[in-house]
Image (cartoon, rainbow, N blue to C red):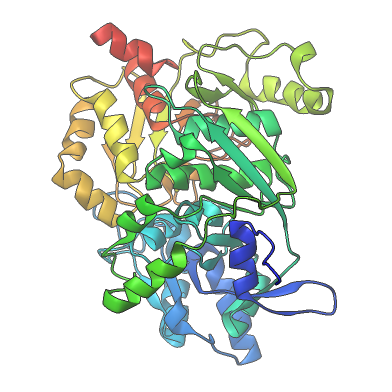
Length: 473
């Protein structure tokens, strides 16, 4: 009697969606649903119009306005003039192709990687494509998601398949329990620090272990969001009871008997006990402290009590990058990160703009004031998150402390909507990239968690949230 070979979660999802193979060896992977955004979709729409073709499955295609929309209250198409053409082109392309658009004034508008999960557009075991590098954020639900270029997007829209070489399989086991005020952002930054920006290249990463299982679904999305920053092709946490409970009742999730059938399938998606991975990595999360970047890529990370590294301590293959980062960031080796004065704090982006992120930050901010001279911003990831936060009074907590409370959108993550720092400013940000000039010309960005960012805004200097709260107690 033949027995089936043990398979990973990734194998199960990939094999289920593989509908053919090209002569060049790439698999044709069926894409269940995709979400477009205005910064890139108009190029794909223009290509379809040139070819006189239409979107094959508009019912499986969704669109958002997120990258270029202004975050100022009362915004409209023209509040950010550089985004007006993108917004209008997206609207026209969606109208011509019958695509559901979450427009600038839609009650469900927001960042694609926030909106898709919270509405149940993305589901466990599904394949998902987005013209954005942080597509794998939705892996927090157990989906396999891929970023795609604009030409590739046009192909997907017409055929509903994506041509891919089968990635290798990698499991990252997160052992132990996270300490107080340490969360998924800190875990992800530590992983990138240890593996490097190419450490997961060519792999789809499954995050497993006690720490991953103990995370809220929103934190799992943060973990998967940063997967691309260590080179991963995609990343996910296999779905479990927490996933199913989180999804139940979402607008686009299955209902009734369809839900029962979906649930039965989703429960099969755990990796088999004897499944083999091409690479395995273990991170002990017990004792992990809040993490923060010191340099200009997401692998240049230390614990909050750490110092900018000495050149001799840097891996020789990363030394040139470190020297460049010292110069851009205006830091000397051996400088402590805690206590470094900052000019700006940003809490938001597809990495850290969901309700639990805002609740975490508000718990630090409540009853305190932003330090004099610091510009502090909170931008919810979706209009739904914004409504829920306001219903809980979180907006008042932030406003009373001196934060700007914005409308939902990508905002200062890459500054495509005009939200940018000033040259020479030092910014602590909950975003995913600290590249040179990303948040504005000559802006020096330190990536951190919402708790660390909130504590820093109050202190006016990079701060250890544990010490800030212990001092208050």
